[in-house]
Structures are given as C-alpha cells and as structure tokens.
Image (tube, rainbow, N blue to C red; front, side, top):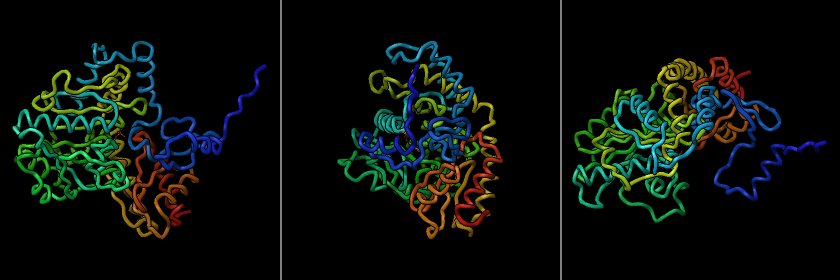
Length: 408
Ligand SMILES: *Cc1c(COP(=O)(O)O)cnc(C)c1O
C-alpha cells in the first residue's frame, strides 16, 4: 500500500521558494504545472490563456507536437557531443536556418544574451581584421531603451538604471543614441564604428515600433559608413510580427541577425548568430566557443522549428490574427486604453494609469484566466502563441475590456 503523495498547493510552493530562490523576479502568483498549445494549467487545475508565450520563446505554443516529437526522437539517440566532435544534426540545422534567413553562415549558441555577446565579438573582430580599426578602438552604436540581455557587457550599454545599478565597472566601447533617430545615429557613427546594434522593434521597452523608413535608413547608413548592421531579432523574429524576421517589414537584410527565444521551440535554449561568410568568417578555431552550443538535441529541435516556419503558416496567422488584435485594441482606446502599438501578434498596450499599474492590470487579468506581463509603468505586453485561435484571442480582448471596466 502506498501512502498518497501530498502535493503542495500553489500558495505553499510560492512560500517555499522564498528562502531558497534568488529574488531576481517578481512573478504573478500562479504556479504552472502543465500546458498545451495556448493554455497553461496551475497546480489546482485552473486554466489560463498564455498571452505572454515566454516572451516569444513559445511562438508555436506549449509542447507543439512536431517539436515534442523531434525532441523525443533525438533523446532516444544522442543529446550532447560538445564541439570537440561533429554531430550528425548540426549541419542540417545550420543549412536550414541559413536558408530560412538568406544568410550564409550560422554560429550556434544557447541563450539570447550569448548570441548578443557573440555578435559583439564578431563585429569587433571584423572591425580589426577587415575594416582596419586600430586595436581596441572599435565602437558599437546602440539605441536608448534597448534590451539585449543581462550579462555585464550587455548591461554596460543598457539605459535601464535598474538593470545596471550595482553591476559596474562596465565594458567600454558603446555609444548610445535615441531609438528611431537617424540623424543621431549618423552623428554617432565614425571610422571606429564596428556595428550598429538595434532591435527592429523594441520589445521590453514596450513594443516600440520605429517609423517606416528607419530600418532602411539604418541599412543605408551602415553600408555607407562601412560598419555592420546587427539586428537583434531574438524577440521580434521567427514569425511574431507576421514575417520570419521583423526587418522584412522594410525588406532590409542586415549583416548580422541574432536569433534566440522561439528558436528553441519552448523546449531547450537555442540561439544563433547569422551572417555572411565575409563577416562570420572572421572567427577561427579557439577564438570563440560554447560547450552546449550546437548540441544535437538543440539542433534537432531548432531544425523542427525552421521546418514549421518554412510552411509560412505561422507568419500568416500572425498577420491575420494581428489584424484582429489591432482592431480589438483600437476599440478599447478611450475605454481604459490610452494608446497601443502592434505589429503581427505583438502589442504594447498603455493602460490608463488611473486604472492601475501594468502589474495590477496583469494581476486582474490573471484572475480572469489570462496571463500577461507588464513592461514599464502602465504598459502591458500581449504576445500570445501564434497558434492561438481567433476565438481565444477575442475572448482575451473581452477579458481585457472587462478588467478595464469597459466590457461585460
Ligand atoms: C530576451 C532577449 C534577449 C536575451 O535573451 P536571453 O535568452 O534571456 O538571454 C536579447 N535580446 C532581446 C531582444 C530579447 O528579447
């Protein structure tokens, strides 16, 4: 006879975290135990529509069958070799991913921050080896309001004091200009500039969409100035905006594309730096590496992700349902929403501050069975899985209307 295993309640699990878990997050009080598609379920069996989708790491929803199957099959065969040896999954992954983005070469890493760090290293090496910048003089121009990750070098060029305070000394070699300002960018670029590093849409800043023409302007300016255009597509890429890459909105091809988040299919961390051979070819054996980067499990899942994107179905869904999202939000302006920015299935919604902070609105939505995350102040971000149905999306918009006091 076996004694019934007493599972702990959500409240018990939340308080159990307190003494043992670093307090670098302030999660909403929901303890997720299982998930499928666009829905998660908590310990008590309550269901929630996931309108955050792991900050776009879950573009294909939770446990997409094709991705789970790819992972299962790979788990049965080979999971890790290190790059000391070849593995039989990496070539195929790199070929498919390069093909998807139209760039020649792939540097596989694991997390987004590692892709950004690797992109910075590649740009600096390119500046010294190809452009001829004097040793240790290379600069990289970035945009105010950026979010590129949490390493010491990356927070060195953040403009978010919360992310920086207490973490100095900082890495030199970065210049910060206002986002969406080509004049300021032009003034910051000079003969020491290795690269301009920007998000095509600033996600963490509140889904800030630059004016049409900005990305084309960055492309032209960087070409003229003989420096690299690095697009951080870690959150904006892989279908979210209705395109495989958000830069496609302006039909721009950057020199370097950084991918992460959804590339791991919500299963494993997978990131990559993509560039043509004249750029990524500056790396030689021993100059950069990663124990887990390009591992066969990551490559198998990443390949399955690329296969999903090759169908075009998810980009199409993001475009079509994005119109529903935009219309729904437009109807809430003046009814608890003071403004919003949206592209594809991705929106930053500025809630009337009188109705509460983004955090408070998120907590109210949670009680309605909708999970979202605030960004700054009274802004919440909506980024549902691209597999969400129109009915589910409309229901989520109805819940938003309700918690803002303008709906039934
Ligand atoms: C999430 C994110 C990163 C960092 O990715 P991690 O996997 O959390 O290190 C970098 N850039 C952008 C635009 C992101 O959204």
